[in-house]
Image 1 (cartoon, protein in one colour):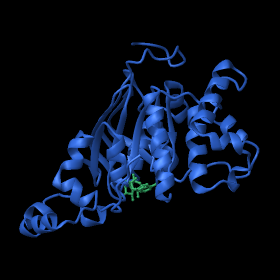
Image 2 (cartoon, helix red, strand yellow; image 1 turned 90 degrees about the vertical axis):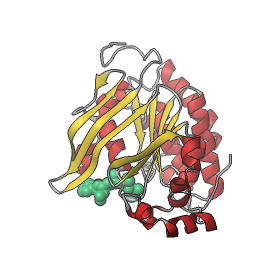
Image 3 (cartoon, helix red, strand yellow; image 1 turned 60 degrees about the horizontal axis):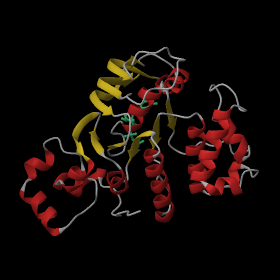
Length: 290
Ligand code: ATP
């Protein structure tokens, strides 16, 4: 559906399309090479990969924040709802309905929880609108702990609560597509389970989610579709449940070093080196069930 950038909300048919994207930092670091990823208008898509695979770079390219990291798109396209986002800034992405929760839950530590949430309304046309009130109600319903701590400084929250606040702040802008960068990073398993439950609920309420994770067990459990990035390229893609059953994903990303897998790897040295992700990709052996 064609519409102006500041036009009415989408009809629900919008998809994000990343097509043969090449991204570089400076002249020497080629971070993404021909990456193609599609995120439908609803549901959860996850991008997995080891450190340095290019996951954050992909999110930065989508959210218009690459330039902040001295990176640039060198080829390919990012489009949302049929509109090209290449070369646009993060404000344009937000106006299009895409909001990113960056890695490391960067909340404003000295501001209160309420002020942090209000900051999520910047550029969305007013703090006192009915839409803003609705967004705040939605966030406090998803994260009741934020309602209890509304007047506390964000810096006093636990790591998990700060992650909730970072997600809540992003939701204040009313995104149609939420980009989540490693929401489970550094959190205790119990808190990871709570965050995962909320991500599932956010998607159920109709906000599409693109989830970047190193914790493959959590991500594959949540997502409908998964992509595995390996040194800047898409190595595997498919329904998350199918990928979770492949030997390669189980061995390299779910850390299932069972006898059979280890045997298999020992018997197939060529397969283990012919472009597969290196062993450093192994995620912590922890299966999450929410
Ligand atoms: P992690 O899980 O560690 O965050 P990642 O999969 O998100 O890893 P990226 O951070 O996207 O990977 O990094 C992809 C490649 O780009 C890596 O080689 C990384 O060193 C490089 N890179 C990332 N940011 C920059 C930057 N600002 N300047 C130069 N190189 C960068």
